[in-house]
Image (cartoon, rainbow over all chains, first blue to last red):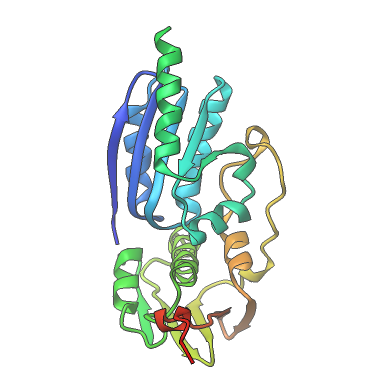
Length: 122
Length: 145
């Protein structure tokens, strides 16, 4: 199973990615490269839609941890939506849930991103 | 089902070869996800820690399913290393955490039981997961009497 990354919406403030497939030791570099390309110094929010992600292992978590550290250092955050039971379990094992902003649905996350965008435009 | 895995195999390739393993097809999605994660963690550890010292040495995976339990046995030749000694991850803000070293903790937490042995240069890690059959659609139907 491979990883497909769909860039759903991107602004200076927020980057939104939909991950489909598996985020494992083979595919994690793909996400790393994508984030390096789409996230700039202005980025404050990276939104990950995970409803089509079949599983995530520590290699994928490393990319998310690295990005989260960079974002938090400048007051930013990672938001996630659509976690399956299996994916959520792995996030809970590594105790990263308190550092993430979790949305129940893609719609909720999109509404939040729009609010972030509106604030940035004021 | 028995597989031999080499350093050039991808996790996707391993999982594809396992696709036909009896028992795995019937797993619930989250239990199947747990098996995939454990296999990828083991493969990644082989790449990072074993193959640099002994390239070309394959590892073997055997998967059996019986009585609502999946057993995966990982075997490889190399120095003695017990992966079942992984410590749980401590709660700590992300700013103060190191990024790596999560794989063994994840394997331990996803497994219901782990067993490790080392005999004549052969490491064997056996991981057991309880895997009750997911409910069938018919199970939710309320029948009139």
